[in-house]
Amino acid sequence: MSLPFSSSDLKSDRVYELMDVESIQKALGRSRASVYRYANTDPEQGLLNLPYDPQKLNPELRNSDRDPLLFHPTEVSRFARDVLKMKQVTIQVQEPAQNETNRLLQEILQELRSLNQAIGTLRDP
Image 1 (cartoon, helix red, strand yellow):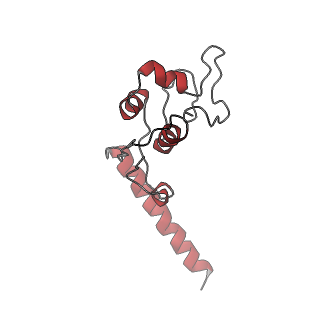
Image 2 (tube, one colour):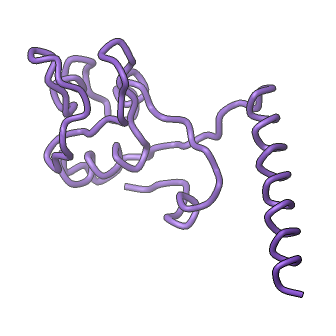
């Protein structure tokens, strides 16, 4: 299994796009029903956000059962490697398209960082 990013990339400020069921279906070569069967959900009892299960494909936290199932790329690769015993799976992670909201959030983050740095220099004369 090869991933086009390292573990240090995951700890950075980058925001990666979560994978939906169709993306996982394409990446793993499994049917839609198979992906749902592997997902760590309980639709019959309507429970959301079940405890982590290493034998299942664990989705990101959801607020409602109407929210789509979304999965982090590292969880998908872990599942493919550890549970499905797949040797050659490539999960391509792409940064989300830059839109106005993302641009504004990046500007706010930059401003907060500069404020934090300025406050730090005032504390340590």
